[in-house]
Length: 558
Image (cartoon, rainbow, N blue to C red; front, side, top):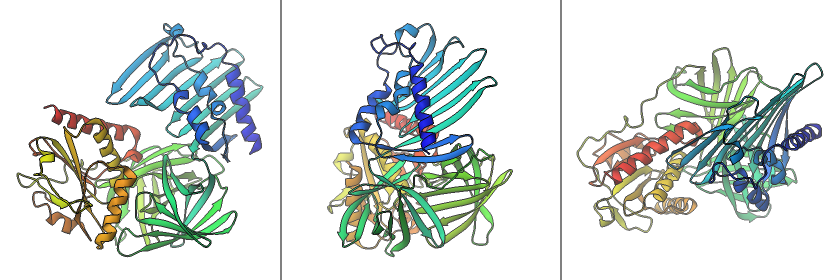
């Protein structure tokens, strides 16, 4: 491990030293308001003492390291210095600057193949850098080299290919994840005999679960003797843990989204910087979208969905898209001929195990301690889901609602606050992780459109029958998401059949969430069933956001 870490540091040093030809910071900028890497990362990361989980590929072998302390100025120096956004390169590079909604993309492409920096790309959203990519190449009669840098959110990577003809060859890859300050632990859930691992970061007052690019907080709420209770930020569930020694904790994950409590045994081990251990590169790349079929009670593979996968080396992330929502962030590996994916989003615990063959994957899906289901992926086959706008339909001319808020005040669509405004009605549940993703989208709507133009209201359907528990769930939802629109209690002890009775103008409630969009006259213009969130792919989710933000804008300004 020390050898790999030293090699990466040495290569970064050599690369930076070889960039003296680049213009100095005082040179005029070609694109004046382009967001730079250092404006987002280095100072704030150092100030907040963020760490990094890294994995390396060298000579076909995979290794891991966790750094609790990182000098982010040095760590990301190559990203900051190797840029061509300077006026002196005006003739050397073709610049494309485009915007779609709040997302701005700027790319620089070399006009001459002899230029070392071949291209550079920057993506910003609402003035905040969310992506950066750069490729450098250099070659002569005796040697060649290629370096590829990429940053996206909390992820960054560096790929290096170097060769001196007949003397030296070096291919390396390092991938880092920026993680909050704290110690890295590996949690292992016992799903009825099947171990389901997670990566966690333990702080003094929080346990943070990492699923791909998502970090979920569980706050320390109480200590009773040796027992620690970490509660979910969003859902009615918690970890109850006891320290065995400095490197091990044992306990339970307790989920109370329903009246009947679900308990899952869990063990945490300190200092393990991986989810699923893998030591070598696989022979397959599963990146893309494929058809996945789940078995029914008789074992027949009939339920059809889409699995979206993104693979880098042996590491695998993605989600499963259904007509009523996605499985959120799945995180795992391809190890030899096996696929392994897991997630725990605060309300679900999922494990996917599969055997990869030439054109398919055969596997088992484990959910909680009792549920096991066969599944099969047809690699490269694409199944077309029904569109989310085609499932829930209006059967009568008008739509209305009237339910109490968390304080007991009755709120109706006929109230003055909604008059002459576009209204977004979210049929949701505080227990629903897809509803969490939709709520984050609705917060973005709230930021874009003032209350004088657009009103949002959430109709909450609780699985529990206790009104006091339902009220606490609603208060947690409002507080944790900083919700600024009313959340109303529509029903206790709900199910889809009971919920449908409350909306006679609809052909049913088929998914939580369901978003109903009303124009300024409160006519239904669109109903979106389910929610496929960011885990289903950046391009797909950005397309959804732009479409619906555009629809709302058009309704505000008819």
